[in-house]
Length: 80
Image 1 (cartoon, rainbow, N blue to C red):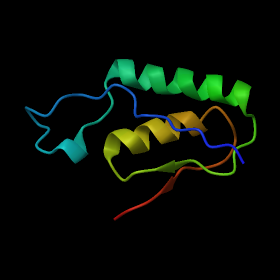
Image 2: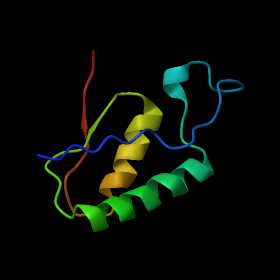
Image 3: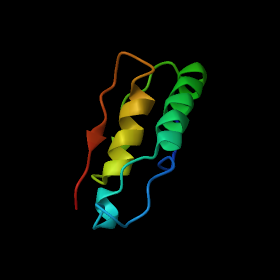
């Protein structure tokens, strides 16, 4: 079994309309970073069994873009 750990891509800071850390979305740079990471991972490992991400917005967005480079899997989210 192989396990790949990926940290979320660049996210916006707390402030303005973003009140809580959990609500921080990816920045435009982060969206691009996550998409490129997904393409690179697809080359390294074309078939993944799962993409597990935390419920934080930036982690979900990163997982979605990592998965977009392949038809499956869809990210699975975990909660506390």
